[in-house]
Image (cartoon, rainbow, N blue to C red; front, side, top):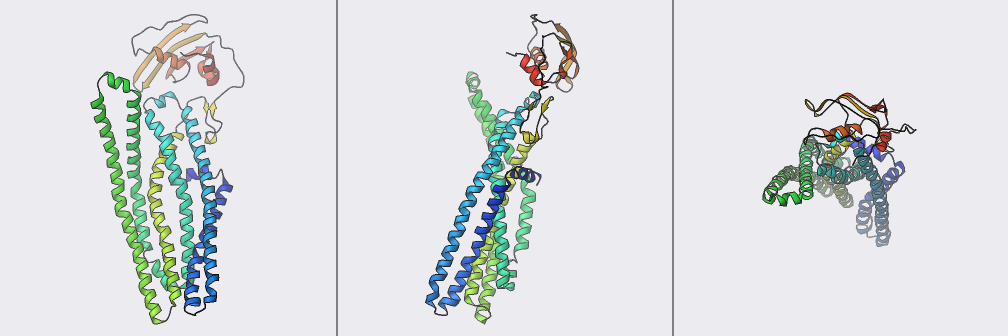
Length: 424
């Protein structure tokens, strides 16, 4: 639930849109109970009482309820779409901003395709699932509460029978929710792995053709794609058991209402109009419950996607960088004044490792005076590029010191330092 609450923090940026969406949802849901009531009055007070003069007003009442319901639904959908797109824009913007502030070391072992999947697909999943799901979930719960209240007002015994399957529905939903998260995480991971491989192969298609590796790369892609197929089938097979089971439990409740309601009508303790209205209310009760089951599936997928998004947002930024709240205004620190850098560079016993325990540089020392031309010569992998990367603080050295104009390099602001050094 931590991921859902973190999405809520983004929703709170637009309280008026959230309030407007909720108000429209309440008003449209209230109209649901009008049609069963109008049907009951038509059967009992018009048809059975032979009062055709009352038919038109009842029809107009039901029509007005439908118009009002769909009008507020229209407003709700427009408001919610605007609302969710603003939230997703903020989330994607914060994610991209944060990615730019991460140290280069963080990118070393991460595939570009995986990062693209998180920024595009995973954020879209958060939009479709968590935001749409929250809005539709609120509407469904409101409808359940309103319909249940009316059912108890009409007939307590039938209301209790209609609610009879609820313990089974709750138990099934809890079981699915507690076990689904791992399956969806594996599915998202497999999708990301396939996208990463596809991106790398398309970017390197010239090399693949040069070394005649088409067959091998096709086989490698099929292996990764098969992992995604398997992960998706696992998700779908569990859903194939869960969804029909929930529908069966709902049908049990409807059958109980039909059986006991029909018996009450035959016994003369209940009017036919009341039974018809109650059956309509039962349908209105189980319809949002069915939507909640589908939302449960979507929310589990959204949680897995949201975790992958917030996993990046939780990564620490490179030293000397400010990550403002929500990454708005985040950026490289600037001391507020400009120091003229002459270019006197000195390395003193500098050591550095890309991987702990495997030093790339060890106790390197040299001096490059201002205006001098210094050539670093060595075999591939000797550390020439690494020395330059340390100078602009793309990476942080593990020991020793780098001086610029007799000042430790870490005392310079990153913006000040990088604007003064040109890397070709």
